[in-house]
Length: 227
Image 1: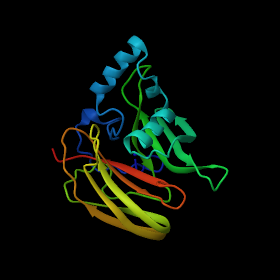
Image 2 (image 1 turned 135 degrees about the vertical axis):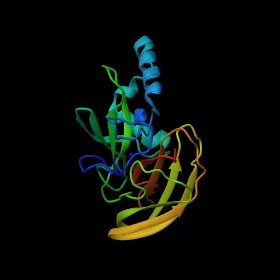
Image 3 (image 1 turned 120 degrees about the horizontal axis):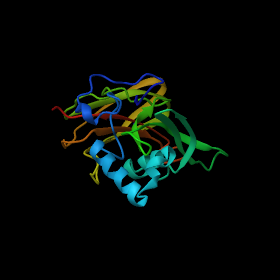
């Protein structure tokens, strides 16, 4: 979380500036839980030795962990639907809403196998656009602060929170709350400042809610800092 999108629909890639060795299949940004192939290899050794953290082999568990633990969306605790297609997986993550009999889908998280071998773990690389899109900055873009973030949304009286996250940081590197939006496929945009931290892909997050849950929809994209 790659458009906010990934194939299909086609990924929002635009000259990714991350070191090539970090990218998955030469184009996808590693967002979570691993930041590079060295971390993947270390986990594989630990798993083969003592079964360490087997959830890395489960795309649904990884997608829920990304939503709940990394993004901090604690209400999102269900994998409503999981579709695995070769090296790709798409997990519809959501929550149980009191007003309806079915879980509410908050996002479609796109994951890919990272690394090689029988025990290649799943890695979040983005989210698929639905009624909330995050199209600026472009996927894989090299960014600086302040950062303009935007996309399109369908909804009524929406309030979009935007954040920049970095693996290993307890707090967002930057945050803005909130951008008022609404309509049908209406553009939304906001600017925020963030504190750069080198070394890993940054995750830009847009989320909205407040009608039946704090976070009802979210979208993410992966960006990098100038080399």
